[in-house]
Figure 1: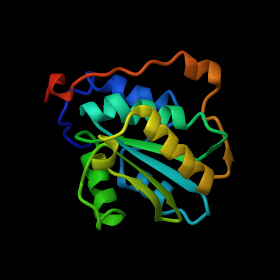
Figure 2: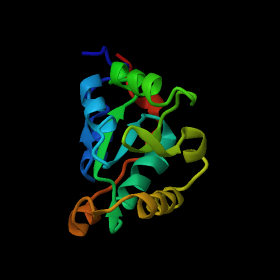
Figure 3: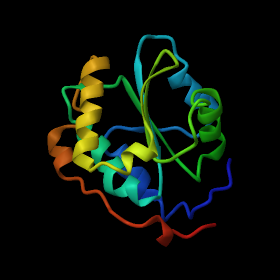
Length: 171
């Protein structure tokens, strides 16, 4: 188990905002590879969640809205930067070695290959709605699973918290 950077109780809501829209949390290298490296012609959306403001203001609400689309990835997994350090470093070293480390980010994989990568530098310039639109375009191009990830009635009950990560206690 990694030593978390942030108080696990204080970041729980950040995790729940993604699991509520259908993401599966992964914590280990083995879990990461089970999804990303599979050769089953399935799409896998990886969301590297973050405590930063662009994750709160754009990334989590944007991907939540995008997963209400008619076409969605076969699997959606998430890890929280600063918490699942070993697993995130494995993703960066194994699958994203051509890119600078950043969070938040969203990557759509198929058969271990990147189809689309939304880096922090791009995400922080977008609104949640614009990110959702760009993700939907990506899903429509590459995905075949029928959406939404959660029923509309459940999604409509959700709210996404916008908070500055500097207010989260470090451990």
